[in-house]
Length: 201
Image (cartoon, rainbow, N blue to C red; front, side, top):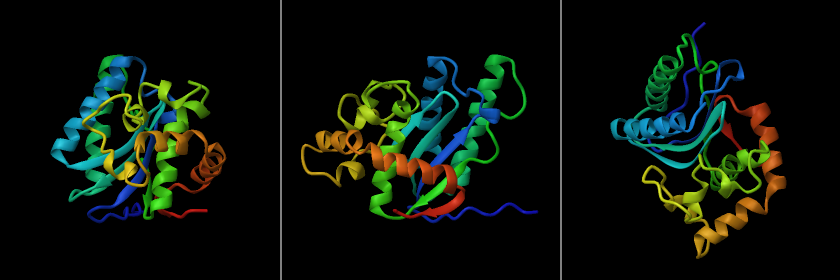
């Protein structure tokens, strides 16, 4: 049976998630996270896109990604293939690193865009890895609250929804809305699939 083709059009925005096969780790050491981000930057140069938010967890990752003129599957195929080769070679493994196809959720309105960004940045807090999202090293949260800089992250769209100072307003939006994030998490667990259109609740 042929796999369902993912919806794509220039400028499409996605919440993307990919998990390790059998929930295994896909990042074991700081150098793995660093390699992944360097690779992501290299892929962006080859297949241009914008990253609005990201979070790399131990056994999965999340992106809020906006495509340009390259189909989403090309971007993700390149990223996962090269990283899988790196990881398997480094740790003497073979076989699939990632669990099936990556998950994609088409984000088509402003409310869902912001909910997705908040959800992504609160992942380490929900997992009990840190108390505050700014304490997690492997996400774009520090960039969006102006504690760090990263050329890979596009901040303009996220900040455009908030009054100045945008970084302070975004921090309040993320850290004072945990209930909405719990609702979003339930929706992600039951609804995110291969190109479902996400709707606000």
